[in-house]
Image 1 (cartoon, rainbow, N blue to C red):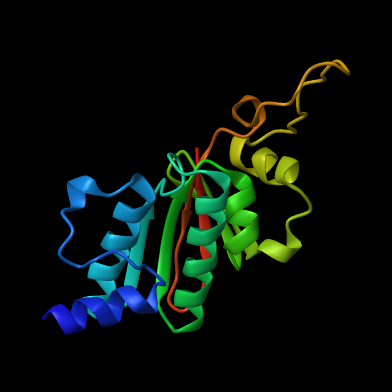
Image 2: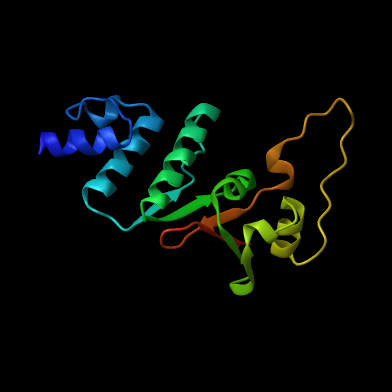
Length: 161
């Protein structure tokens, strides 16, 4: 069993000792451990709910890169995230749901911008707030939405309002 655990952790590039208590791991390491458990169980679909919410930028990029690798190996990915950039970075197609109704499904490459996607989600034209030159944009101001990315061997985003 230890050998199998080490093999799965090695696939993920995770160097922690398989005997390490999960409570002693950092948040990003705990997420890798959960992914490792899915791989060990030969899961066909991986569901990640807001996996990057407590991660640094470096950890976020590593996790999204890992998700892409798993997709290439044939695993379906469900990604729930309010960060549009993550969806645009990894999704193959997007489905917009509003009030429980299907609005649209299209390849992410056909979505003109995050503003266009938010407009589809809310059902009217969306214009990001104007900012002064000295104001830094805050992601939560304009793009607070829940996303689900899902499919087999591909990413697809389902946007829900």
